[in-house]
Amino acid sequence: MPVPDLANGVFDFVASNKASRRDRDLAPVGSGRNERALWFIIAAGTAGLLLACRLFNFKIALTSGLLTIVTNAVLLGVARLSKKQGWMKISGWLTASVLMSFVTIVLTALSYVLASTNLPLCDATLISLDRAIGVDWPSLVRSIMHQQTLMFVLNVAYASLHYQCPLLVPVLFFMGQQEKRHAVRSRLVDCAGRDGPHLTVHACFGRLSSLSTRA
Image (cartoon, rainbow, N blue to C red; front, top):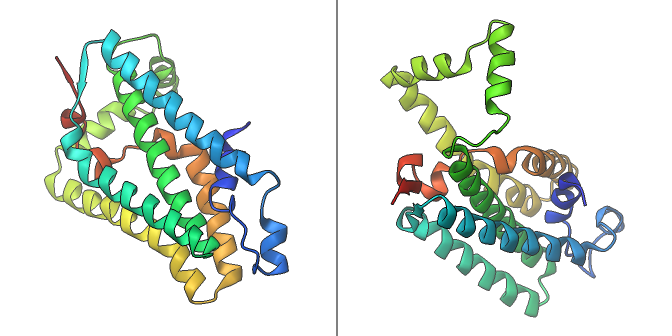
């Protein structure tokens, strides 16, 4: 199943019995399978992460991500209680947020471990192609990292996204902005499905140096 299809099911895998006709039309067919598929990806990714850490002698510093893990566990518990109360949309949104968070955390951590092993990944090929057309991303990143003021501004802007993105969809939902909510949600899940696993999740596990360290 393609990643965008999974992402499109993230926010819609639970359809309320009281949903409008438009909401029912937007709910994906077999949405329960999407939830199970995401849990399977999380389990498989976690197993792959543990195996990679074992093979390449890495340790994961879970303390920096403990707050996020606990928060997700609490949200998942609230989602289950909401489902029992019949609040299907709230349950679906909370569960979707937890699934997206866990998928991103696991796959990002796995990408960190694999990228640090000097395996024949495609990064070197992509870098050489960029340099052939006059773009040297590593040098650009290094130059930006030496600009403390710019780095501070970029870090603040980046960190703010972790609060804006999760709040945007429910705020639009409770404000009754259905059209805007559907448009934002569609773009959000498409981006998350394509690019989410490749993004750095500093808010989840802190800096790269605290995420994976040689034993």
